[in-house]
Length: 413
Image (cartoon, rainbow, N blue to C red; front, side):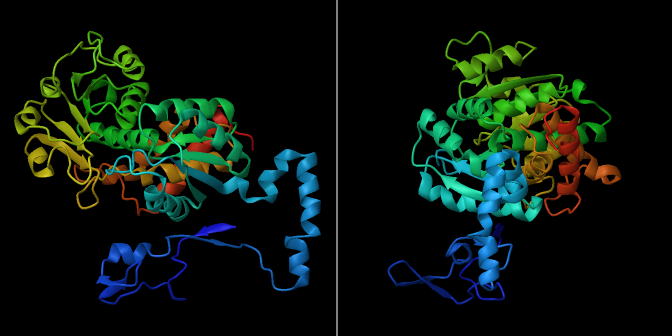
C-alpha cells in the first residue's frame, strides 16, 4: 500500500472546493479559508498497489495465498522487507509537545502537521509514511510504544517532541531498534544548515574551520546543529539560551547543556548572546525572539546570518543584508530557505534503500555534502542552498546516504 498525496474527499480530478464559504462542524456557513478547505478530510489516504478485481485476485492478496508468504517470512524473517511494505515505510511519531511554532498543543492538534510530514516524505523522497500521534508524554511509555510498533516499519521519524525528552527518546530507541531512528527537528535542521554553511564559506573563500558561529537556542535544533557543525569541522561555536551563553562557569545547566558546554565555546565566552556576536562569522537562529541591529552590526566582515525562526526571523532580512554577505531564513518567500524537506526524504530513502540499521553521523554529513553540491557553479549570495522543488535534490541525497551507509558498514543490502 502507499500513502497517496490526495484529499480523499476531493473530486476525481483532485480539485479543491472553490466556493466562497465552507460548512463548519455544526453545519454553519463559514468564510472561505483555503487552508481549512485543503485540510478538510485530511491530506492523505491509503491506496492499494495491487488489484482486487475478482476471486482469483482476492485469493492471492488475502487468504489462502497470503499464508504462503506469511510462512516464508516466519521461516526467514528478513523476507519481510521483500514481501511487505516495511522496506519503504516510515512511522512519523509525535506526542504533540513541540509543534512548529505552536508549542505543546497535544496529539490530536498535531495531526495536520504529521500528515503534512508524511506527504512530504512521499512527494520528495518516494517514501511512504504513517502519522502516529501518541496520547502520552512519558518517556518510558513513548519508547515502549514505538518499540512495539516497530515491526511494521522500516524507520522511525520522531517529530515535534520537546527537549530535553527528545534526546533521551531518540537515544533509547536507537539502542533498542535495528532500524533507522531520526529526530528531524534535530538532525534534518542540522544537515540543511551545514549544507548552506559550506556553500556560504565557499562563496567567501573560506572553510568551515575558519568560522566562529553563535547559535541562538539551546533546544533540540540548537544542540544538534552545534554538535553536527563541530563534527563537520567548524572552527568554534557558542550556543546561547535565554540566560546567555552556555558556558562551563554556569551552575544552572541541565545535563544536556552541561555536555554542550564541554563540547563548544573554545573561546570561553560568557554573558549575553549579543556580546558573543561581536566578531562572530556566523549567526544561526533557532529560537525566535529578536536580535538587536547593533549586535548584528558587530559581527565580522563577510558574516553569515541564518535567522530561521518562523514566521518572524530573529534578524529581519532587510537588516541582515546591511551587514552580512549571506542571509538565510526558514521562510519560503526569501532566498536561501533552510527547509528540512531538503534532507529527511532523501536521508530515509537512502537508508531504506540499503536496509541500514541506523543513520550515522557519516550518513548525515554525506547528505549535507550532496545537498551543497547540487548548487554547484550556480553558487551566489542568493543561492547557497537549492530549492525543495529542485528535482536533483532527493536523488543526490539518497545516493550519497546509501553509499555512506555501505562505507560505514550499517547497510544490509
